[in-house]
Image 1 (spheres, rainbow, N blue to C red):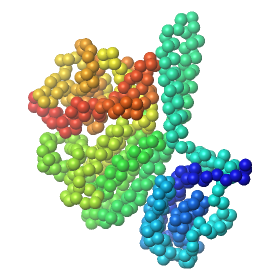
Image 2: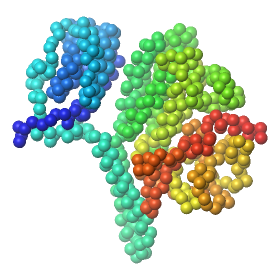
Image 3: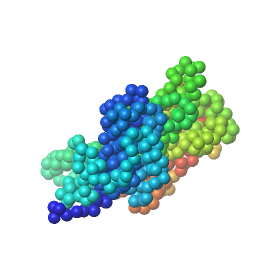
Image 4: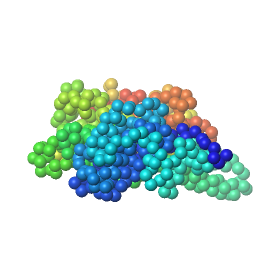
Length: 568
């Protein structure tokens, strides 16, 4: 059996993932490449990456990918040998090659025919630089591995045992995300079972309670350690997300006729792998906005005494169990007057003396844009509202800070993972809900007399010299229960709005395992998920931003409401 062959198609997913990593390596090195002073180590690294793609492509039966990468490899080999002079034009062609190779890898994974026309055009461009004459089909050449012998098109069974989509490399292991999700679900069930056991411990006789409780505490400690260990497996450095924007800044700056550089800080900060891809879209909007609206033209920057090249910073850090992501630039900053004028044009009422934070918040309104004309980059008012919506879906918040001629900072705060939540258990009538702990500002007992009713504005209360909207959970969910004389107002922040949530009582803080409501039932407004409590009952996890939308509270209404209360 050791000589038996197997179907190599089962390894395509792992191969494609490896190819993407090699392409990212080539792209990153190209973007930092100095054509006037080529670095031999960087050239070697690019050559090795291309060489690996070519070899794997031929082995797994992707001839067009192998041929295209061979042309890239030939150019890089000539650069290493010094027979080809580096130039900015060549770097641009190599970046184009990264795009074409990436598309071919995606086609290979999807099982569709790759675009032969774009590949042919690229190979022609590359061969114009290369000194090596064009070759035939690389996949038909047995010696394409240079120093190493070529691998046969099929793999022995022993290789199958050493590789089922899992491989080791440099002390790390690659595992399919679905397998990790399954493991995390099992740990979640274990956490729930442990909570139920703790709840049951309360009914054990006093004589046995000491030993029983000691065992419970030990299980809790081991469960917590296991949960943290499993969650850490799914954590990846956010630098893997940030790195792709180096190319975005490079290409877009050139298209806009501007000079800009991307600076990455805190790339080692870790975040759940599931969140990384969902962050790409909002971060893309923010980076594009910094280039289009923030970074000035060369003439304007020189007149202001600024460096010719603008700087965009992507920064990440951990803070109180959350990850804080900041996109900042050293550009012109937001134009307060222009934003207010646009608000007036759209019929959005806001006091001209309103704090900057409320003015900046206007740009999150759907369709809001201060661009003078519509272009391929901006002007349609689609972007910042999408950013806030996408971040809110990840249980995060967005805040903008800006100063004229000093730039703009957009700060995103969100949990490190969507699998487990630090929450506060609250009661309304006989129902129990979980409120995300990171959104809570303060919880205070209130009397009914402290809550004012405004015409067409609903209920409000004063909190630290600020009037905020009051949202009743029993009203929103139709819970019929006697109203307590002194309910608890949980002041929270969500979607750029500060408001108070009325509940009957606070229970306890706890980490809960998030279960999808939509998967098992359907999407429910104001609900982010569900969890199983130690009692065995199901508790809904509240989506605070969704509750605000259900109650009709938004940032625009907040500004109008504050002004109305001031004149009430």
